[in-house]
Length: 366
Image (cartoon, one colour):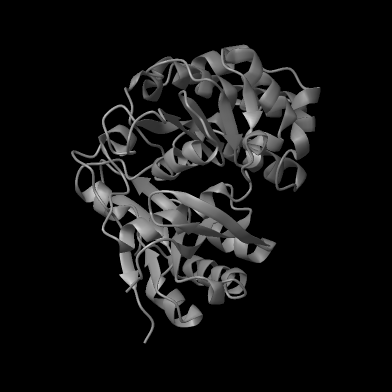
């Protein structure tokens, strides 16, 4: 299906924060990153966001899943179409609605075969299911891309990529190792809730999509007793790799119900930072720096809290020449090439799967 050497791949990502769809081109052979290309973003209008939100937590037979899938597919087709002619293939993650690797598995809305027809391009999709079937967490999936990014930035010592989307996840990378699936090269896991609780709070109370720059949280005082109780959750005692569903800590919103808007936002923001702090206890060795990607890096209050809690310097990934708005979309373009070439996309250190495994299905247009 593909020529050898580096090719342009187009990746897309719609995260748990439900803000919209990112799309990005990356030139890669599935090992090294040669170049980054054009990007695009298409926000979900409120009607689409409401359709997706209604289906959160539902499995394929759920009553709201079909409408959510239609919204996801339409949004992806719209944002990908202008870039697709430049790509050899597309990586389509879909929209995670439910994630229960120890139970029913994982569910991402959106049909890759339908998208392949709409774009008239091969589409790699369903990245997580194979990993879960083989005993892995199915998440996070960006670590192999983070390993390539560490090399692209010229890192020589361990570095951490911290993604603060709806849920937080991190990858500790040792770029001295020869490949991402080599033991000791990568350790990855979900840290805990990140933007999702604050986003849900301000949506309910103030009809806003997010706390712009963390200003509301910055005006409040965090309830440290609520945060301490949050940190007593059994999840934080589990050894990584480990993963979460967006709604696993949904009770946090109930805990802050009696607080003012600002104090509630400050409490939820501190909880997100404190979860990362607990995650740092699992680093195999101290990282040279912590590079933050995802929407959370724009939250100045959250970034200040992280800087206070963590021993290593904390900075947005832009400090290393990367695009924090598009890193996950680029990741799924990169992973699509790995899938198409039969390379692994996860390993014991990233998802807890028994052995390195390549996930994903490939849909080709008629």
